[in-house]
Image 1 (tube, rainbow, N blue to C red):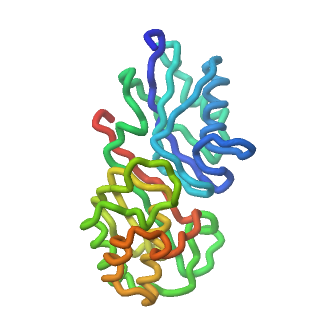
Image 2 (image 1 turned 30 degrees about the vertical axis):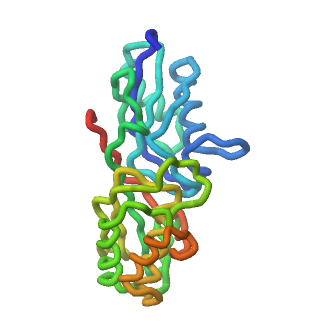
Image 3 (image 1 turned 180 degrees about the horizontal axis):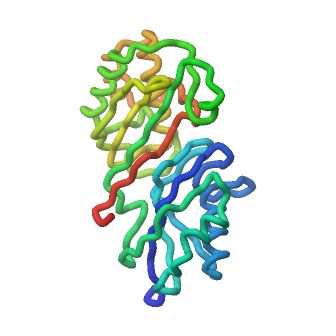
Length: 248
């Protein structure tokens, strides 16, 4: 609209207490809480649109959303005031003026996720990482992860009936690295399907346990059948960590 101005918000959140990002009936979500805080501060109804959607319990260390506002100048106290209206689980880092047609979801050129696994019970990692008792063959998992870059159709890792036009994604990074507390899976792509990362990690864990061979990943992907891939791992270890745009 001609009398409105568009802004991007960069934020982060701990997803444990939320039923994902996107507003839904009878469940508290990050989007609902953020929209309420923005509407309260700006004294007008604000409806944000996110760069994607995260499921219940999934975290985001970087997330972008856009909204339209009927004022051009953001008050100097906006960031501090909005954060004061939000719970400690959500933090806004930036308010960014953009072009009127900028789009938080469709303009994103790359998204990155991490999945964190630890092997020893640790109360300070509870809700932030998946506790796995079995030790894993990281070399085998990295061999299989490298094969992901050679494929584009990842139907086998997607939830069914997701109403998307294509299951094609271009993965640019997929690797496992050891961390102080365990291992972390890093993956980047131009887009992701619903439940894709958690299904990939579940399949890689089967490979790490020796239940599948690294080369089995190609057969699973080519089957385009979700039942051939591993089970989805718990949400607590998953983080959306990066979104790239051509203008931010």
